[in-house]
Amino acid sequence: MARLESGDVSRREFLKLVGAGSAGLIASQLLPTDAFADERPNILVIVADDLGYADLGIQGCKDVPTPNIDSIGRNGVRFTNGYVPCPVCSPTRAGLQTGRYQQRFGHEFNPGNNPGPNFGLPLTEITIANRLKKAGYATGLVGKWHLGFAPEFHPLKRGYDEFFGFLGGAHSYFFKDPQPVNNAILRGTEPVTEDTYLTDAFAREAVAFIKKHAGHPFFLMLCFNAIHTPMQATEKYLRRFRHISDPKRQTMAAMLSAMDDAVGDVLNALRSANIYDNTLIFFISDNGGPTAANASRNDPLSGYKGQVLEGGIRVPFLMQWRKRIPAGKTYDYPVIALDIHPTCVAAAGIDLGRLGGKPLDGVDLLPYVTGKKNGPPHEHLFWRYGTQSAVRSGRWKLVRMQDGTRLFDLETDIAEQRDLYKERPSIAHELEQAFEKWNSQLIQPLWSGRPAAGTARAANRVARRQQRVRQRL
Ligand code: CA
Image (cartoon, rainbow, N blue to C red; front, side, top):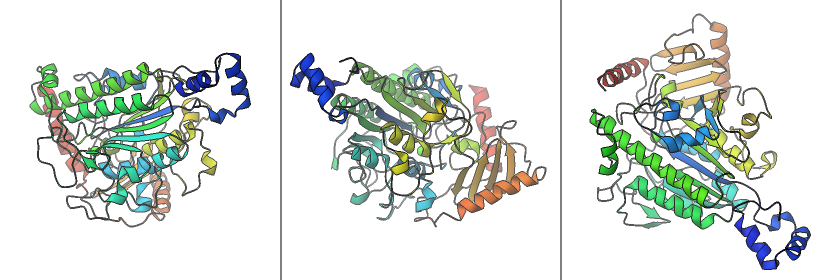
């Protein structure tokens, strides 16, 4: 019984079935260890929507406390250079699900306002849930999907046993509001009436999933639509932020605080089930803050959602697994949301060298954060989003936007203000070559979407406007 993990209910139940004490011990020696609910971790991936780099207490936010989300970083790792593979929603989620650069399979853009039936995560790709389900995990997705509306793209067809949420994006937080076609709240495939503020409803569903599956390894993706527009909050949370005079920031604070409480409920559910320490948890945002639309902030970064400047692609990125990762770690080498797939799969005991399928671009982060591997996990990170592109290697980042190509030293210039393209031509050339090699492996986008206009001038204009708002607060 000594190896019995707290919360390992199935193993305990099994021993009860075969008899307590010596009979149980004999049975446990005779049977292969696979016969027990094993010690593999539960896995929880929490995704926020349009949350900026500076929108958490642990990231420097001063006016909106986020103690529950912060606790994930404080009890584990905070990645200071944590990226997403695209500055908008759907492509990032495609990369996260597959562990592969989404432009490899044409998922380069959001679907736009009139998505055709072909929009969806291509069926040639394998999701995290596909792999974990095959390994015996219970799999569930709560919240925003945004990876296809047609039946073949539904989460239940992409490796998830259970689904509660909506298939599109930009959902209202109140059910009474009219919704676009294809964006009903679904339980499985059935539309449901939902009277609860959506962030609270997602917390309720995530907690129920955890309670239901606590005795067996599970994988839960919890994809909040907070703090994406529409800007809607409940009185309970708006009252907490009466002191914030800017109405949009006040609503954003209320929405964010509701999400933080929701994360608190979910973490408490893990504690109550005695599985908190052996649950691998990620928290990320799907893209940088749009700033103007939802009063999010990306300080001290330049740019915003829709741009390959840091403000569009560098996000809050936290990881916790108390059983395996020491608390309070800060990790500075660049990592990317593509790493979440292989990290989860490897944590579940699946051999990454024998995966089959197409090669992953992400890497298992666990050996890096536990110190088994030194050096950067990635030699280069790449972005392509229509006419915008970027490549990062070490301290250097090359950025191509509509108003030209620039080179930045992010170690000394995190705000990407000083263009070194002409001063450091050999570095710029090396990055351009690396990008072209990667770019040659990509295919054309499968749908056109609606890429945001991206210029540095526009980014600076928004930054100045935000600065003025901040000074007034
Ligand atoms: Ca988003």
